Image (cartoon, rainbow, N blue to C red; front, side, top):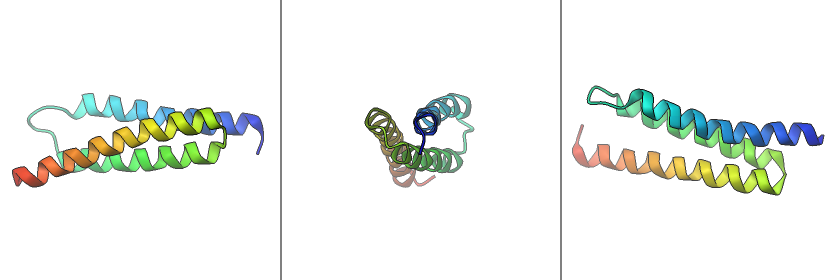
Length: 87
């Protein structure tokens, strides 16, 4: 792959984290559908990890994978909270 393609894939992995953060602030509130939120967080972070691993540049890989795994852990904890509350 070319260097420009690797950089674009790395940026896309970081952009997925930014989209997750924006989506989080848009759906919060008492009427939020948590299952949809969890699905979006999980889907975007998996796509972000894939983009980061395809970039094959060590800086983008580490940054993208770590940030997207943080979002994935957040989605897991949110799923756990939904399961405990019985909603």
